[in-house]
Figure 1 (cartoon, one colour):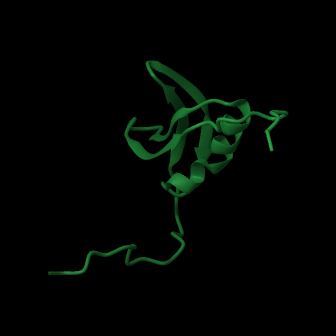
Figure 2 (tube, rainbow, N blue to C red):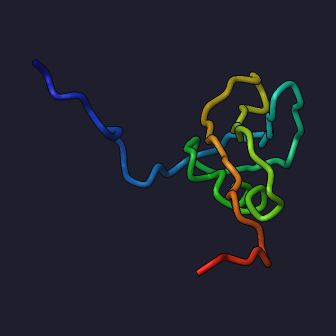
Figure 3 (cartoon, one colour):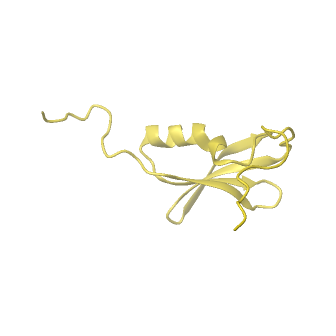
Length: 92
């Protein structure tokens, strides 16, 4: 059985991510555009600043990195809010 490739044969990190992407937040039937990213790799780690902002606001759902030209989803990240909130008190 052949061993699957886990990374591209090209240089690491990729040298020319020249595409532009939209960042979308989907929660149920609601879709919200959160911003635009340019010259970033098409990878879920490009969504990290948006994950932090959603968790800080207590939102959940799914973050999508969408190709601005074609509308194709190139990366996704599921976000679940924490159960506890700031200033919650815990029993000992």
